[in-house]
Length: 122
Image 1 (cartoon, rainbow, N blue to C red):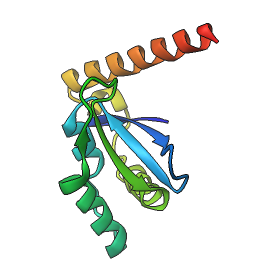
Image 2 (cartoon, rainbow, N blue to C red):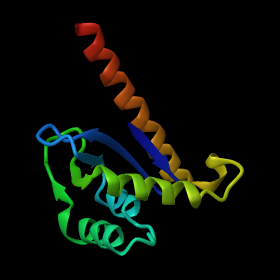
Image 3 (spheres, rainbow, N blue to C red):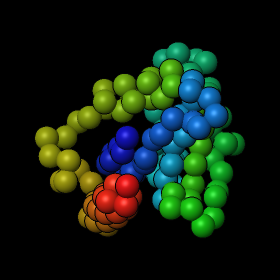
Image 4 (tube, helix red, strand yellow):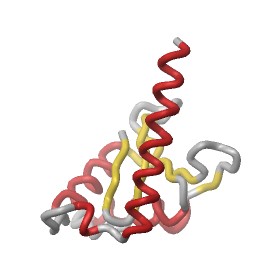
């Protein structure tokens, strides 16, 4: 799943070792920090997100998505719901900084090309 918000672009996949977890991937560290920023009413989920943002983002140099963090699926669900609640714009493109939007378009385009190459090989 790819998510483009006003200030970040992330890719979300199921953790290969535990189906209750997701791996959230970003090209830039600040994409994950931005994605993991939301005021959640549930104190435990809020703490999980804050802890992930401050302590659990790690770098995997040489990988397509250099930065990653792991969350429980229920925490991700709450986070995504909060991001949806915070949509306050009639036009996504106009709500995003030009450089951020350009980088997001590039990220989506490159990821799409890679997926199509992998499918063609099969």
